[in-house]
Amino acid sequence: MLHQIISTNTNLTGLLLRLPLGTVMLYHGLQKAAGLFGGYGFAATMQFFTETVHLPWIIGFLTIGIETVGAVGLLVGFLGRLNALAMFAVMLGAMLTTHLPYGFSMNWFGNQPGEGYEMDLLIFGMSLALLIVGSGRYSIDGLLTAKNGRAVPKSGWQTAER
Image 1 (tube, helix red, strand yellow):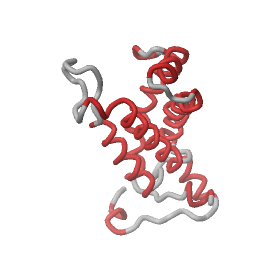
Image 2: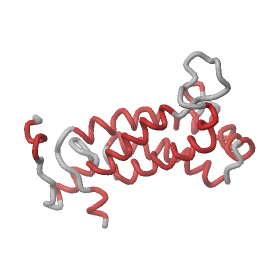
Image 3: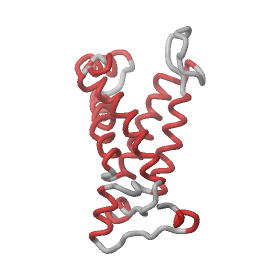
Image 4: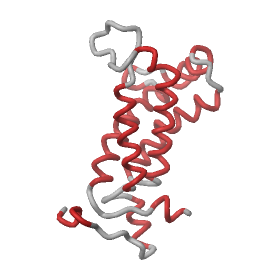
């Protein structure tokens, strides 16, 4: 079971998906967890989740954890598939509880009361692709897989990558 979660190939696809996804999610996680980058910090975010969005406290807590710890996991390629699934779940929750009423577009010009779901769709796509390919090159998952002698070789057009 663990091998299925961490197995990955040595191509660049996983790396090129997980680095931007992990960066964007860590940025948002640090806003929520530590109040960095103009965020409100842990206590205010938990209050927003529980009192405004009416989520159970555990969902708010898990969201903050996934967006911080899970994002770091993506950046280093540790449990990439699991973290990608968690990112998908967080963004699905955000879309259904917060973004959907504002339509497709993000609030680029400040003329709507909230953010739309266009970024959610990008994160869905990146997360689903990571579920398929794994963490890829330069990942802890790749190191663990190779140590077990079960590295997945490059295949098809991916063998041309250097």
